[in-house]
Image (tube, rainbow, N blue to C red; front, side, top):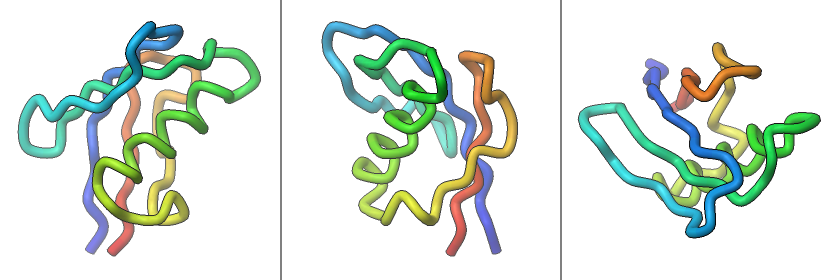
Length: 75
């Protein structure tokens, strides 16, 4: 069964990283600007690395143009 993750994104961050705020809730800081999907791709990569899963298991389901996003983590 897939898990929904809530992600608050901070683009253009000086210090990139992932912070767990609660059960299934994360803050992700990325260097990329929110242009042409660059920040979304970096968010998925950083989140996948933090969760120790391949990026292909993460799917953006809501918030492509927002700083508040929902990702589905496939089993």
